[in-house]
Length: 326
Image (cartoon, rainbow, N blue to C red):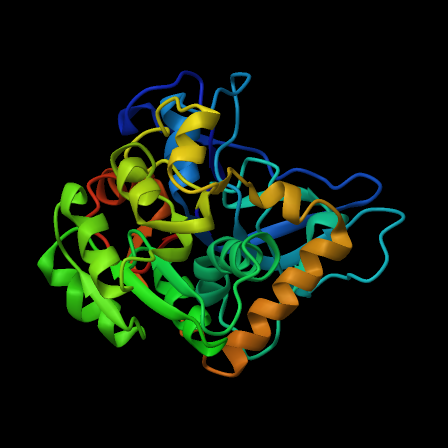
């Protein structure tokens, strides 16, 4: 076995700031377990932490999500033992490591049929899709829903999930190569057009009404299109900043758009307790078992090549999920 290592972010900036450091294997304290990671999920929020868009006290670990095997259990831990297959997706930061200690109340048990790579590729994104659709926007059968970045990691889970509950889905993708991907994932309509043209296409398709819900993980470049595409009393859920944060807006902008609702949720607030977190994961695993959600790993990188993986995801050259392998 190679020496254990972890990434410690000592200053923010570009992908070159990611450097691996040798570590001693930690020992779990009361309420904790030691996990040997088998796969780590790469998520856009990792790039926000690394760049400084989401400020962190430094030095800091990086990465929220991983799967692996419990190698040691501390005192006062119930429900888990050595050898259990587990995952976590709500932090704390530090998943970019071969081994780490995690509080047991942040863990979810993995179904035996779910591969480690598939778990790491889907937990954070899939539980994000669960709360966005079912608990935040409360999408209903028959609702028109616009999904930005529809062929990306979260988008590729949102599309089939929305179709499974009966929504009418409009997908927007960034380049023509992703049109077929979004169609195969179940989108009723796929647009690959400049953002400034998108709202007109959406209005034409919906007889001028617009969509009940916009699920927007892009941010700055999509905000105007989202606001112009949403129906009267509809909801914009801006859950990511792939192109930068949403620009400032006023309450009067929402009035002018048709008394619309805007929310900026985060997974941590919807999976705040162990019960919420495990219920969300159980719902995701149910959708995977039913083959509504099919795990799509578009790229695999060695953990030591995390910087290269960040460059790939930030260039929007990937589809589906990306995993890092120790």
